[in-house]
Amino acid sequence: MLSRNYGTCLLLFLLVSSTLFAPSMSQLDSPWAAKKKHMREKVRKMFYHAYENYMEHAFPHDELKPLTKSFTDSLSELGNLKLEHLPENYNGSALSLIESLSSLVIMGNNTEFERAVKWLSENLTFDIDARINLFECNIRVLGGLISAHILATDSTNRLVQGSYKNQLLNLAEDLGRCFLPAFSTPTGLPYAWINLKYGVMENEITETSTSGCGSLILEMGALSRLTGDPRYESAALRALRKLWSMRSSLNLLGTTLDVTTGEWIEYSSGIGAGVDSFYEYLLKAYILFGKEDYWRIFQSAYLAVQKYFRHGPWYHEADMRTGKATYWQLTSLQAFWPGLQVLVGDIAAANSSHREFVHVWKKFGVIPERYLLDHQMLHPTEKYYPLRPELAESTFYLYQATRDPWYIQVGESIVNSLNSYTKVEGGFASVRDVTTMQLEDHQHSFFLAETCKYLYLLFDDSFLVDQNYIFTTEGHPLPILSSWHERLPETYIPTYWTYAKGEQQTRRASAMSLRECPAMALRPGYGFQQIESACHIPDSRADHRCFDDEECGVDSTTCRRRSCTMAGYCGLWIL
Ligand code: DMJ
Image 1 (cartoon, rainbow, N blue to C red):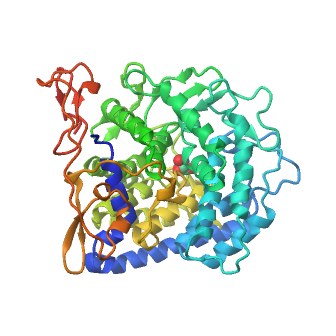
Image 2 (image 1 turned 90 degrees about the vertical axis):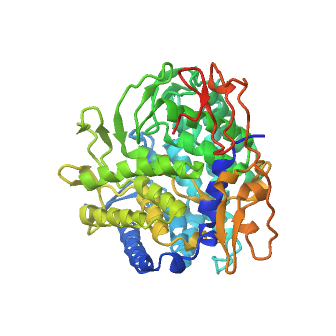
Image 3 (image 1 turned 30 degrees about the vertical axis):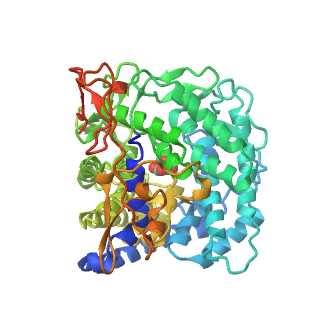
């Protein structure tokens, strides 16, 4: 039997049903309940300050420029390339409205959600001569629409007028269709840029990033499941498989590659920019679709990261061919990693990395985009902080996993910094330089989709009670549905038994043991069944000697994969 599901078990358990298993907020942390309520209201105000200013000064354009109270049509410029083909009368794609949809629902504003859905249904079109970045458009627009469609049609009947006829899904499908020509390459790896109306432009650049072509599967997979058209999921899966086939013998990938030749361009990579969501989507795709392949790939990729990039709580970059360290840099995007580690079940590692990011946040007031660890100085040209969500995201996951009120304090200090340094009359502005706190005229849409959402969920997770969601890399929730699962998880980890406190008794429970979502399993009256461990896999040789990791098994106590040490023995040395 296999060990691969231990993380998923914990993750489903922690994220999905924490409020079920853990004693309720008021029981467990009553001294903190008032603080959490107060902070939740502070975050709600932040969100509406950003949202209302966007609606007043920028909508239906894409993003708000909060200092000048004007707008930018950034969707077509994302990835720092200017759009050459924007029609003169183009009014934008209401990007920040799309990005706000799921946050509105999480904050309980069904009226505004309904108004937004109606406007988008009547006005949004992708029939425009616009060259867009496939990855950004996928995570922000396709993900935003799909998530909102699901929220609009779930059993809560939040759309009271009953006028919703799958318009958001139809829009998502229109967009998905525009994406498909990008995948017509000899390798199946998609172009990074595509014109919504005309497909791949002549002389289009063939360079893309690992995350750009390896993290499309959640949104495109969900689109296929919702529409019954398999083309979206197949295209994204084919690209992901091709990408993984390009890994080195160390199970490492580079950062950039050519989609026509399938050759690497940049051999150095880490867990930050250009690669981050590749790892994230492997694990989340496994959770959402239950395909064992995703777990196998994720497990190998995760172990390689821990082996070649990790240096204590820090992660440097390394050359995929040799595993030798290349750049010793902390980047703001890396701060999502502890959140992913919570999903894996690696809480101790998550906690120690998270603490370092918090330390950096406290040192500068926010997290700078890039910090040179070897020189202990800021990167000369990347001193900015564009309101990124990653630290808030990891803090939310760690609090869900541990209920340690320390994370509430971290959340509070993030909120306070955002309010003191970035709040302006016209919204929230990015920080251009963390040493001077000089501002920049841009409120990125992910501030509405992610930063405010994760902070809100940190202080009030009532949206997650009795629900099974995963969040896309842009923070849009997708429900975990058994009908989307290829098959249910096979194995479970007794070491990770979680205790569910009922009114009269405490019960042990595990998603893996029961082979279904714990929220279902722990309903009152559900018969609890104990099943023996299945994670033990012996090493290939009885004397535990090895040449590579493949010859090592899985530790029966911790259910961790053993790996081959430099001395040629299988062991649990990655700790
Ligand atoms: C967001 O668009 C997503 O979180 C993405 O995965 C990374 N960059 C931004 C936020 O920093």
